[in-house]
Image (tube, rainbow, N blue to C red; front, side, top):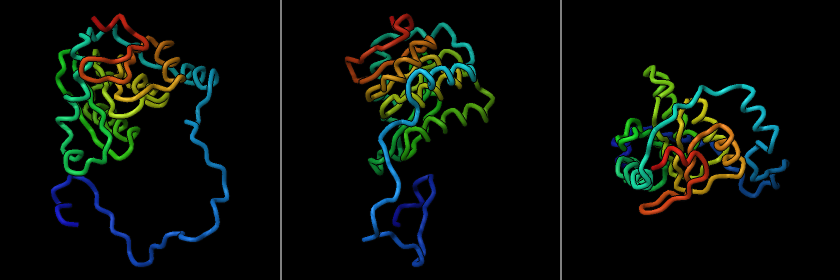
Length: 192
């Protein structure tokens, strides 16, 4: 693959023995679009395992919050080359990009951010905000909470379960974040 050396990632080449299942029978199992976590039981389980206490900040201006996706996008080197990756970025209250990771999966991008903080001994990261390039599902809110991140800003929509978890935990959750607008679902006290 020309130019693959320039990408800081992994290149996988399949041998001739690798085969696809073209023309085979339909999948023999049920597939759903559900997240795998449903309702009150998932919330109770999440809280039973505990979260670190969230700091009272960061104090974010609406303008800064609304600028995070573009700030993150301008730092996405691999997305600029491929157009096919999600990103997660951790920002300070002043908008400084602290950590950015990209991956095909939005969950993996968040895991990479949290993992880099763990390896650097920087968990919990204090008064920060995590920006994600996709939806804000229950699992992403849960991962941010477990890492002690008090605010999450998503380009896409939050799920109803994500909204409930964020509100119950006292997390600031914003969705549909764009220049000039966003929807603030919980934790409005952190946005001035």
